[in-house]
Length: 602
Image 1: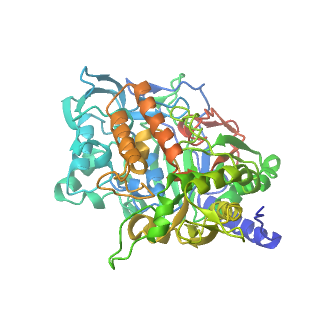
Image 2 (image 1 turned 90 degrees about the horizontal axis):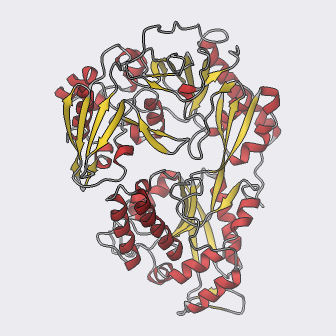
Image 3 (image 1 turned 30 degrees about the vertical axis):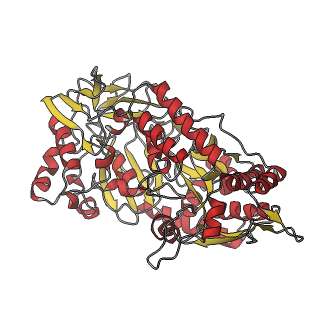
């Protein structure tokens, strides 16, 4: 077992630093809570979206943390890093929204839509009376402008590929001020999910679009010195931005959602996020009552819980997270610029043999990892989809319980033998040994790697753990291919199309051999076919059959040897009401509907 600990003195120093930093943030907002903000009393939009949650009390401030400095608030670039995407998500809404609690797409800025008989035509009816935060009307012109910008070659962005079918952009047509029609080149299963991309304000950005400067709009400098330029249709507006320090949001006076009593959402007056570099400082601030919410890492759950009663919060065990952890072997058959193979040919032969990969899988003590590394806070994982994703998880894939004897039988079948010292050799006499790379900043993965090394010793295999800087490791996996085996994880996505780059042989995240021009194996060709089939039908049950078969194939072939999924733990101050916990996603996904029972001074 690996015990992760820190000295009492170091912990005290971290606590002191975290509390002093948070105190600085709070004092900058004024003593206690920031001054109250006058709430707008004007009538809500004619087509306001009415929350299904019970009515609450307006007022108060939500204190959170943001794990990194946003690089931009530009809608075309914010998706490139998590901090920028999170900041922008407070401000801009889409035609549709994803209801995390019910795991379904629901109306957003559009109040409804119709699907044509060809299943390629979608007509959206916009909410009447919706305004941007500066009071300017929201209309179909904003929708058409947004997609015009996304598809403009002058402005490269990742949304363009997601909002295209076979490389062909959606056709977007304004019918009238409150009706927009989309046509897709072919049936596109996740259309309603992806069309929920952030809609941009034409009246604010058309000049930048016309003069070619759109990619420079809504920069960090704009956020810092002229936040009024950045308008919103979301729950919040940008009030103050202090780089590397904090972001202060205020309630959007023109937000289109209300409660059943007619009160405009959100209930909170302000949302203040402290920008932190490193999870530990954020966790310490929460544990000592200085923030409202925290995603608590498994290794911190015990000591954070000990502070719960004193500081008035609860740590929620959310069950399995969306994340996956896996080990894989480099099966890339190519060579580098010097003509040297990426992988020694005899090792490549091992890695490409499914019996070898299956044997390795049987040799991993996943329950031991759960108990020894995760302290019981996780589950063994057998396939690419976590059980957290109830809609797409296949519970019947082949499993590989810890069975060294079964592993040895598969190795013998593949032509391997053991010498007198118990070391494993291939049929040509090569000792079986390889290096396992992982990112050095992830203690849990390194601990999993050490357990794996001990498990492999029982099979006579020598494994050397090679911790690397994350970006260096990603470079090896994605471009230089200079490694033998890897240990990483993915966060997971609700819709299976989010895994396209992993599953499809041409994908950049097809870890074991990315970017294939044609599938290297029949089973990869079948997965490619299935991924096309699931994409070209709106029949959910048909999609599920295709996606389940993809999971079956991956479990049988073991190109990615899944190990464990870690439980998700989230902490929240007890004063917050209207929680609507989802199976997947954050506990505070519906923060616009949450309200504080007591408006505490800090």
